[in-house]
Length: 127
Image (cartoon, rainbow, N blue to C red; front, top):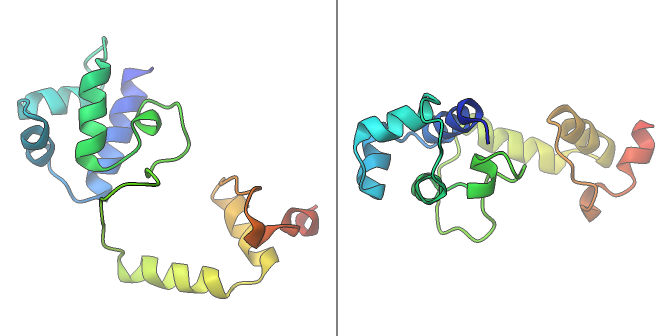
């Protein structure tokens, strides 16, 4: 695990969910400076229990936080989050798109949804 990359992921997820360093520190029972040092990549010997706690406090997959998974959001999480108006419109537009356009979006975003029946065959259209 690269501490710098882990720190970038912590900051990305934290800001994505509009959480402060204090929010996370309070949730996991550590000092704000501890979370700040993890986020800055200054802790070279990363502790998995702390990373797990940070991940669950933010509501992301601990394996993603450590760079071991591409899946940021846990499938069975009780965390709810609000979509911005732009994100809502993007979802609507995606749902209305045809298979080719969906495949282009997925490829553009570097998402692997080859298992998705929704876009089955779309890769052939791009080839």
